[in-house]
Length: 114
Image (cartoon, rainbow, N blue to C red; front, side, top):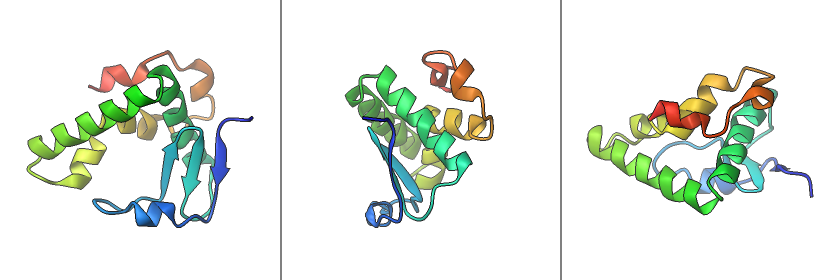
């Protein structure tokens, strides 16, 4: 099985857009996209795949929710800011345009964004 498995034109991101508008979501080993996947978005979501593997998948989701709830508390319920302050998202957004990032990325690189 080749990871990631990409699913395009899915209604799942729209259904999950409760707090913020989701264009794509990575649920290991799947990258599920509302429309079509572009190279930058593929890199962004592939960074999440790597993060999920490092944290044995379940650890990633637990920490993701923790950081999001922490952000909601700090930013007084602003779910958009809470999302952008999640270390996993910060790493992915900072490096989604670097075509070679995953080749030279160090393990637990998201740690520096905490």
